Length: 388
Image 1 (cartoon, one colour):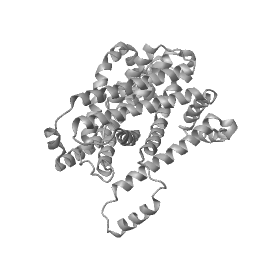
Image 2 (cartoon, rainbow, N blue to C red):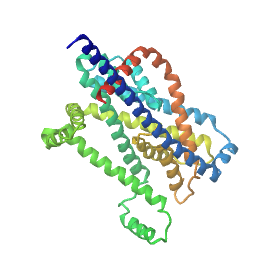
Image 3 (cartoon, rainbow, N blue to C red):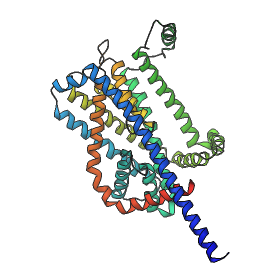
């Protein structure tokens, strides 16, 4: 090959890489804009409903209890820092000796990236790469720790929903299938325009209960594959194209916890406690903004149910929509009134603002890690362009 041919090849390769990077960026931008558009539609619709019900005007007239609002922000801050500590304990249980200061810094950076919808890299992905760079000899375990921490947090959320629903008496035994069948028949016949909110609430709780049960069974299979036959599940998952090997690797990371069940229980209990802090924060906001609202235990249940909707990849909207509906479906007390349309949205906005306040305090952690973050972002962008 002549020198000119080589130069042409290099030039065409560079153009190809630049084209891939450009295509990847436009694709990513399109996804982000679509997510923001959907979130905006949901929030505008909720605000219109709140305005029509008079929730905003009532809020202006009510006395505010600023002590409750401050306490709610402190509860949310405790929950956020608690998730950092949970990951720290998880790393230590895997024999990864990462200092608390480093864990806190990486967790804070990941938290800030997750809050920014226009962020180039997701917080979990960024945190995974940062911790892997810090543990070059055990990169796989370091990366798996982030995924396992996320799964434990989600599992703990459903455990909390189930336990609080039973303790508070919110769940009805047995499951109201007969009542649902009768109501559904009336709805299909046209004699009902909307399904009763209390019935939908019960079905949501029972659905969460079913997910908790199925998740517990799956966890046992993954933790003890040899004793339970779970290895056949792992083999089947590994055969799924593209995502199969990644999930199989995650399951194998979970298998290590079968040897240290106390550590797994500790992680789940910590996660439940910090999810409870988020619920108590929402309860404080309700107490600070309204004359009458739910008890603390009921608010934890409602907030946790709404929080489970955040698995939907939208920056805003799912949590606000679900909590506002739940406020309209669930009576404040037995045979009592429900909250107005829009009052759940107001609590959700205050709840979101508390997370932003916590993020503002964590911004220095980003500047301390700015060089590492920029390097990781550049590498991840290059890898994404090559994959494209």
